[in-house]
Length: 316
Image (cartoon, rainbow, N blue to C red):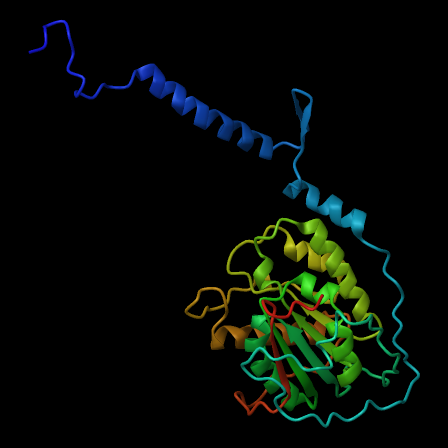
């Protein structure tokens, strides 16, 4: 039997209230300091070490201005009468698989430069050869785009759907140049950014976006921003700053109905999206084109389709 002055060692002891307070402060105080610092642009020095934010929202515009290049005059030849070559490719090059056509899958073998070719004279009423390039959102947008092309006399020469692709895939690889060289479009639609809404390494993505913009010079294009399901951390600003003036369509302002995954638009959402793009192309875009609403929707899709998975082919 234990004496009255001895405690039972098997009885749990209550922690000291001061210990609980100290543990709470040791957790909450650093978090509070980090939060306060995140709202400040100041640099902090502790014991000879310098703490500096990698990139805060207040620095995005300054970073973009620093990395932006002066816009070069358009190199479109407005006096040429050369007709683009006729596309004779089969309807589906790669549908639903991860295969990559041989003319693309050579990025790591040798540098590729885009052969020069002349564009035909074009105006708002020109019947274009349209190339659609993008991530998984482009795969849904191609069907209402197809309706618009058929109703306005344009030809959709290819839909390249690069699953999970980002600015790095499109900017760093030479895949885009190879596609352009083979299909000779007179107008390009770029649709991507879905996988980059939460990206914070904006400086690296800005460099890649500038690289992509260089690949497009001399060809009319529409750079379509992602259909945000959530607020991005600056990727739309990055894309818009790299694109030529009045060539970027800011999709994030639209309210689109969503598919079951909550990320992609549904069928109706894609149609509303394309209707908005078409109105912009006829009124405000730098490179205007005829895009009157189609009288019939859901028409058969007969353009070639290439599907690539960025997890298996990143392009660089």
